[in-house]
Image 1 (tube, rainbow, N blue to C red):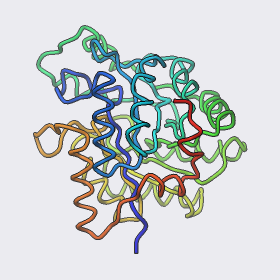
Image 2 (spheres, one colour):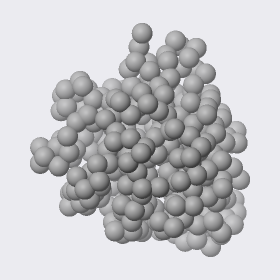
Image 3 (cartoon, rainbow, N blue to C red):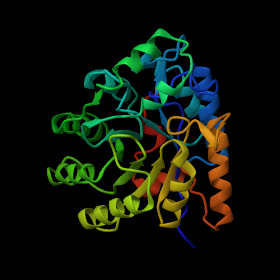
Image 4 (tube, rainbow, N blue to C red):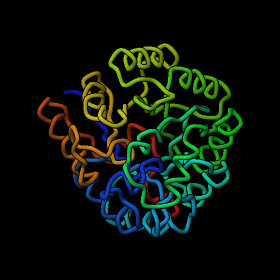
Length: 309
């Protein structure tokens, strides 16, 4: 039997905006409902950001996170993974405030500084509801997501060494794999690794099968073959890239953070709709789906009883 596929669901993110989809979770109640439903549909890991409940802008406020984290944990056994990427223009200290307070089992960690072109789709929206969305569009051409070596070392030290948190290493390009190899050589983190190949974001690698294979073979040369890996395909590439990853022996990530659609020209009405579609496809291909406890064992997580929410 093939190893069960770990499905991660990225529930809301910080790049998509309310004007792009009426189904984007905004309030803590929205995030709880969407996260629990995604877990029930088959997601073993829930990747979470927070938003201002009034207008939907990304927020790093731990008080907002604490309005949904305990409730999700009470209602599901899924692994909770908190962002360290935050949102555009947040400082590193702001981005780490919530995960340091919550001490989750997992957190995301972007593996380098990059021109992040995830905002280009916003320019296609006919009318933006909020002033902050217009401001976001205005900075999108000059925005750089910053994660220097010092930044990444701080995250590994403050959350990893300090709190026993494990990481979803988000690799947008091949160079990010070499950044991770450098950090591992420094002794700041120990395997097992969980690599998330992020494909289809302008500024990073393309969502193409040959690019996926190149990243996978590069990772194998750097880390051996004993690591966990996953793929998220941005936008319309979501399902095709996820299925290709699973067929290659990897894992997959879906969710409204990564794509607002469920098919060509059709908005997804929920995160659970995307999880359920991926699960159905994988099960029809005779690929089993991992449980949260499967994910905990394979990723060497500290356990839900050791978080602070």
